[in-house]
Length: 290
Length: 296
Image 1 (cartoon, rainbow over the protein chains, first blue to last red):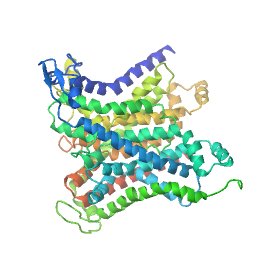
Image 2: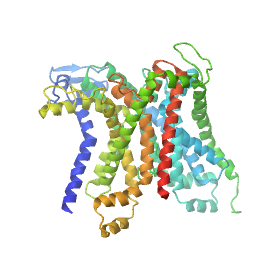
Image 3: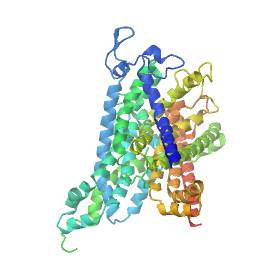
């Protein structure tokens, strides 16, 4: 048994290194002053750590201990972009949950004519490459005024999240026991009451998980945001960071801005971790998550 | 159940709740797709100002007169194959480890899942920093270990696509790992015990008990990784930008360039439909192969 224990812990260390080393390296650079960040070979840890890069990346001033001066904000709309991302992701998550929950329930429980047709349509949309969806979207969106603003971006995200999350929730509702609903109906609840007072409270954890997942997907999405809102006041965090990359000569600020962009996903991931097994995301077709 | 007063029939109630979804799917999915088929049959091009129906002209051009297409197809296949292999190996490895019982397993699970939670753009940035000759971890490590006298350039035209595949797998492997993990947890413990009494070693138990049981999740991971990898655009755009030279220009990158750089909407749509059909074809092949074996 003993050598096996050792092997397990060695593997754990390797896994932790694999997952965390890339993150550590960017964090390392983000805590360096400008001259140190450009030293070659790069230092493995900051000799004079500073939090100033974060402040300056987020639009505040910071005191520079090397020169003894205050330095102004870096001048990139990182804070605005984070706000935009949060608003966009929250809106998409809210609309998705509101529409996909009842739809998922109906598809899981009721017999309907032509149900299979709708299921195939939902599934079919998930196999489409994003780059193939965005092309017609962009052209239609141009004529409808949906390019370059937040409502347009939200609508485009719904095209991805609605079919996917309806599918995930359908699997989740199907896994819930049906007896409680029957009992509620026999006790005289209307269909609507059964849904709002019995089914949804029971399904709250699954619905929360789907909301979180939608939020994370939207927050992390790059391609649609890059094509639809890059360079506009509605710019979300991913395209704003990407456009900084091409402009900025300050690696340490850039690293700090990128780290700031990772805070929300890391928090969501830690919360989501508890749900991932339970949600039955393990259902093959539902899982198309990225 | 005659006691229940029915105000709405099942069908009416169901349709009422489904209606928003149906409307959204028609407006946001079915209509744009139809539009895209139509566009692929035109020479719609903003930079040239043309918009005429040309039948299958775009498709014919792709296969007969586009020298980039075959090269991009080759790069896409190489990238997809590497990504699939890395994802299966990494995901299976992680799942086998996380399936063991040890102290701190919850924490390790969380750490393992972390790369999955990051955006593709963030992954590209992390890997640009790691592989940078001047500020990169790998270059610095090589110098500190005395393996190199100066900055080391890791990405070359010959291997850049491998690095992209590695970054891609770093990001996606945890998802596969959690699939495998869920699957591993339903393998009956008895099977292992029986195999052990039959004198099967750890490796044979893995091949004859674990792998057959994992066939279903292997199929899922294979399918997903293939679809994602074959259509990956963001990582290429933000990690290598198609370079160095043209070495990482995949099909999806080519769709992006045709549509959003050259504004050749018609041609871009045709390319995107070819990409979709290729992905669909691979999916069907996997499905047939892996589900047929189950009977035999």
